[in-house]
Each structure stands twice: as structure tokens, then as C-alpha cells.
Image (cartoon, rainbow, N blue to C red; front, side, top):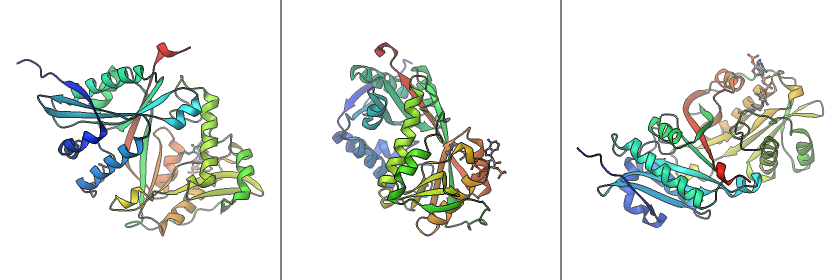
Length: 334
Ligand SMILES: CC(C)(COP(=O)(O)OP(=O)(O)OC[C@H]1O[C@@H](n2cnc3c(N)ncnc32)[C@H](O)[C@@H]1OP(=O)(O)O)[C@@H](O)C(=O)NCCC(=O)NCCS
């Protein structure tokens, strides 16, 4: 029997409602690892994610065979990252499939080929994609297309609906929330925390390390300027020793059947490490979120072992893992 031919077509985001049935059945959508989230809410999340990409050269591709949708890929420009790294960068926001187990790998392969061709035409130099670590067809298709692994993220949760707060750990530091007058102190004290960090930016040989260091400083400063709900500071005497951002997912929480809070960034100045400051900051964050949200999410790199030791000690459980893959357009190099 001849192999089924897979065709990839570019569609406008407005046409997506025609494929709602496929989107409902597609595996590995964001938050699909939560059995308690109804299919309708997962679809709403998918459409909300696409909506948030609309102002940034969004391209959507469908893989089809004999009129049946087999896969979907969305590609969009990353404005902030492009500005920061001084090169046009894009992200594959969705790589969905699972409609036909036999054709899933072939569909993802075809979608990625189309995405790379389009990105090349659009003069992007760097592509990123984050996907479920369970999606082995996507992993295989990405590696075949020339993408390389940049990091693996593990996602831990503390569930306030079912878990009691652990006893408060002991530490010599003092903790308090950020005030606008602290901004200069933050700018001057925290650069060293993420220097050479083990994240996907620093691990990518095509991204300058100094820019990756600066990215974290900008991110922390923006968090202090209102991107995060609050920022926690840890002091040893009068010296700033640690920092932690505290974020409540206000938009997402309107769609999810539970409420979610997250620590997006945290770290301790190297000179103050090994004194329990990180553990104290996380325990503070647990307490902070305990009367504001139902779940506390904490994501870190798979190989950030010290952090995971603290998380499990405070009662967090591992729920999910993602891989991040990157692609670099060599020929576009100056
Ligand atoms: C990871 C990090 C936050 C830990 O901060 P810290 O204040 O030194 O951590 P703590 O003192 O609370 O120690 C936590 C645990 O990890 C262990 N640990 C921390 N650093 C360690 C090291 N370099 N070697 C061995 N063990 C270490 C501690 O012994 C402790 O375990 P214990 O309670 O069984 O003794 C800090 O190293 C850091 O800022 N790293 C860079 C940024 C980062 O990784 N941020 C987290 C992003 S998810």
C-alpha cells in the first residue's frame, strides 16, 4: 500500500475554528497534564495563546492527509528576545498532533520542514520550541530537522488544597518585599546570580554569554517594575543576598479550574550561598501564595539538583517535564 501523502498548508488564524475538533483531540496541549482541566478549557487556553502571538508575524500551518488534519504548528516572532540578542528570533508556540498515531511522526516532520523554510524566508536567525518531554515523535522530528536540545525543564507543584505548609526553616537572613527605593540596590547587587547560569540561553553556543547574563538582570528589573506581583528580597545585615519574584497568573486563572502562582526567577548572590537563604525565600513564597492561590508552580532545569532537593524538602512534587530545542540558521551568519 502506498504511503499516505502529507500536505502542509498555511492557514490564517481566523480559519482555525474549522479545526476545533482536531484541536480538541490533539495531544500535548498546554496544561493537558492536568486531568482536572476540561477539554473546553484546554481549547480556550490554546486560542488565548494564539491570540497573544497575533501581533508578532504569526504563521499557522496544518498538516493534512486526504482532507484530514493530522498536525498543527504555529510560529511567531519574539520581539523582546530579538531586541535583546540583536538578531531576529522566533518561536514555535505549538506543535500539535496525535490525531493519527501512525502518521504523527511524519506529520510533525513535514510541519517542521515547512516552519524552517518559512523562518528562513522571513530571515529569522534563531528558532526556539518548547514541548512535552512525553512527545517522542516531536523530539525525533526536531532532531532530524537539525534542532538541538537547549534545556529540559521540570515542573514542581505545591497544592495548598491538599497539603499543609511545612515547618519554617531557620536562616540568619531577613526577608521583606521590594519597595521602589530598592531598585538601584537590586541593579547593583544581583548581576552575579545568573552569570553563566545553566539555562537554555547560556547553553546555546550561538548566543553571546554576556547577553544571556544581561537578560536575567533585565528580567529581574522588569519584575521589580511591576511585571511580577511582588519581589522578595533577602538581606544579610544590610547587604542584599537573594531575590525571588512572586507572580499570580491572573489571566490564566480566569480559564483554569484552579488558581496558580509561580516563582519565575530566584537566586542567591554567590558570596551568600550555602547559608539556607534560598530555602528561606522559598518557604516565604509558600506562605505568601498559601492564601492567594491553590497551586504554587516552580519550574527549574532538570540538572539544577540543589533546587530540587529544596523543593522536595518543602513538599513540592514533580508533575511534568518539557524540552526546549533551538535551531540556528548558520548561513545567515555575518
Ligand atoms: C541554587 C541556589 C538558589 C541555592 O541557594 P542557596 O542559598 O545556596 O541554597 P541553600 O543554602 O538554601 O541550600 C539548599 C540546599 O542545597 C544544597 N546546596 C546548595 N548549593 C550547593 C552546592 N554548591 N553544593 C552542594 N550542595 C549545595 C545545600 O546544602 C542545601 O541542602 P541541605 O539543606 O540539605 O543542606 C543558588 O546556588 C543560586 O542562586 N544559583 C544560581 C541561580 C539559580 O539556580 N536559581 C534557581 C533557579 S530555578
